[in-house]
Structures are given as C-alpha cells and as structure tokens.
Image (cartoon, rainbow, N blue to C red; front, top):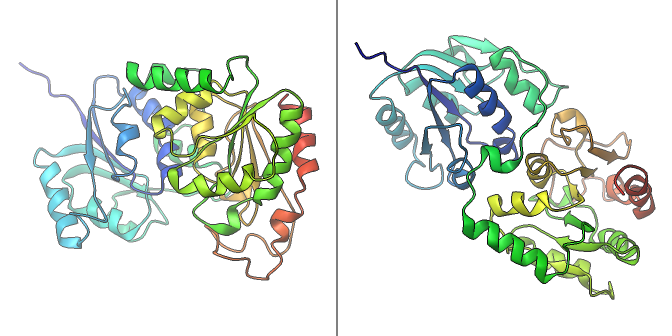
Length: 343
C-alpha cells in the first residue's frame, strides 16, 4: 500500500526582504519534515530566489499586480493549487489578501499570526512578538527559536554554472580577488531609509585609501545613486555594479566580499544568506522592528532620536525636515565601527 506524503504549503508574498527571511524557516521546516512535499506561494519578484531553493518541492507564483490582481482571481488561484488538499498551511504574511487566499486554500490545518488581518480565519494562531527578529518570529510556527546558518549558499541554493562564472569573471575584472572586496548597497525604496550618498562616498574613499576595492551593488534603478557616490570620489577602485547581478547572483557575489555596508533594506538579508558580515545603517527606521542583521559577525548603527521611527517603512522626505536620523550617523562613526569589528 502506498503511503501518501504529508503536503505542506507555506505562503509568503511580502517584500523581498521579508521573503529572504523565510529561507531559515523553510530550511528548518524541511529538517522537521524530511519526507513531506513542501510547496511555497510567493510573489513574482521573489520567484527567482525560491525556484532555486533546494528544500522546496513546488513553487506557485501569486501575481498580485498581474493576472491575480483581482480578489476573484486570487480566490480562483487558491482553489486551483489545492485541488489535492494540503495537510498544513503556514501563512507568514499578515495582509488581508494573504489571509483571504489562505481561507480558500483547502488545508486541514491553517496557521497564521494572531495579529494578521482576519486572523480568526486561521484555526491555529501564533503570537507575533514585536521585539524579536523576523527569523525567530517565523520559527515560532515550528516551536523553535534561534538559527545559525551553518551552510554555504551552494548547499541550499542551486546555482547554475553560468551564474558562478559570471560572478567570478566580474570579481576578476575589478581586480578584487585578493580578499579586500567591500560591498556597499546604498539603495532603498524609501528616501528616508537611504544614508546620504556623499557620506557613502566619503567612507568608500577612505576604505580605498586603505587598499580595499569597493563595489556598489543594487538594482538597475540604483545606478544613478551609485553614480552620485562615484562623482567626486577620485578613485579607480570604486565600481558601479548596480544592475549587473540578479538576486541569486548577488548572493554569490556577496559571499566573496569581506563585508557589506547598507541601509535597512533587502541587501541586509542577502548578506546574511551569503554568510557575509553586514553593517547596517538605520536612518528613519529602528532595529526593534526585527529586521536587523542576523548573525554573530554583523551589527548596526542607529542614532537615538525622539522622532524615530517615523513610520514602519519610511517616507519620501523627512517629516520634520531635518533628516537628523541619517546626518547624525557621521562617516567617521561608520568607519570607526568598520575598523573595530570588520577589518
């Protein structure tokens, strides 16, 4: 008689950073359920990451801005993927649409956060702890706390030979094969989460004078910001690599970096998955939200101000017109931390 595998569905369709922090949960879920069929629902933007994650068996894309934009299409998609019912559903996203989607998925058990929109529709609810890291919040679904990434990215992601060659060739082309590569990710969707370009320029210039090679990374939309950092830097060893790598290639590239310097944005968590030390600069947000660098060799800088945080995500401009949360974190403060803990 054939023994049917347990079918588990995980849903996470939030921002890129939130989705990246789902990886530890999925790795632990696989350890707890080695024989289960684990499926994941995520957004179109993060599909490329999870399609290469070895611990999941099936991937479904909820195209919230495209073909599943209407609630009717969302409901139809939920019913479509669960024609064979799931044994258990984990919803790591707290939005109205995700809860509605979960409700129409056929599953014996449905777990969600107790503060999720329409949380009463889940038959098991997990406390959402506000002052712990997002990784630990997610692990609470599994009755666990604390995570140590003891694997290299190649052990849990499937990289292609083409991706590995591309990254290796790019590192060689900028002459950064000597272990002195430092990556800077200056971008963020929100302006008030971006450390000033001129401050990044000053830091990069000092580090270059100490023999480091600086790679500015991010999406193609950050290329103009990278050029502002390069402008006036007067160095041949600062490189604009924005738009060069996709998300998976960025993880491979960061693995070769000595450290990553960035804002409160998704690259923080790319650095974590790469096993690279991260120094995060908080501007308008705060570590208490639970998205600080997760790892023993990483850290953050955050100015203590009564006006921050001024929002969960950030703003287009400083609400009080000073941007003190950024300008009070001086380049020298950042360099002192780098000298003390990273170089």
